[in-house]
Length: 297
Length: 125
Image 1 (tube, each protein chain N blue to C red):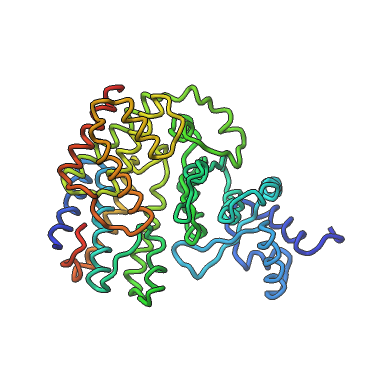
Image 2 (cartoon, rainbow over the protein chains, first blue to last red):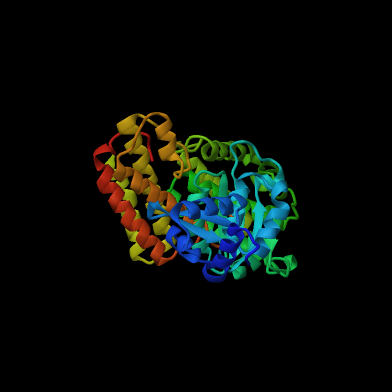
């Protein structure tokens, strides 16, 4: 390797000995026996190329760890980099530096193209260890408009994620081999209603607030709309589809749209406001919706 | 007002004791968020955004420097919420386990101790 530049020699050594691990600056120095200033210079080069990424320790922000991105995955990243939104430039190499990441998908408003300056980019990571993925990405995403979700390949196979619009950024075969027609929509409906009912009971008792109940109810509405063949996931279109399929709740149209607008304001603006209706009325509306959705279960 | 917060924490404790960890986490989460909001409103007359990862920075732009202890608790809360985004569901209603509920319970109690002097003012939680 005598003819190779130093940064490449360092990278090769790090790949050999420290792949998928957190590496300290001391480790970097030790690999080639570099002086502090020399090692800093070389690591800066690797960070710029994103062959190496850094992350802070969540328990102590003073410490920075480095992680090595495998060359094959780095090439994928480099190929698509120019087509990616800028916030993804930092997160994607970091995800590639984590072992057992099987798939990375984009979801939500960014894919639906109803993205605005206050929206986050929703990213789903399919991994054998979702908790580890969330742990490692927290600090990198701190200042990025990215909302990360993580699930195991098994969870992915029977999830709503498959049925909503998505773009696959990376797949080792796990995502593509999953048959979308095998997804049990009735079970998804059942789970969504069961989950929402639990949150509704807590809401009735004053134990959770509007920002918890509305998304739970919306998940039921979304699965119901998909069950009825909806392919458009714009929130307004989903509500329209739901109302079109359930004549007995059409009179709730105004209230439902008001609740949705309040939720959008809440998540994109100031937190802590109560819902736009009184809790009793909201509970009545949510109960009617869940009772309608339950009819399919 | 702090009775209202205690009530929510008690609700979380009851759910925890009967093994309903999802309900427990949701109640603790609601109590913690409420306590932080009341603390910030009472002490600084501020309402803040929804994303707790960004609140400390948001306040810093308004020349408010949070006490280190509160900033640390807030950061722990943001991390718990971040790590709750795992599993097969797209929106909020996740299934939580005993370990999650334990972490939330502990944090709720620590936030209560740190903020209880400031829980008497609106906004409602």
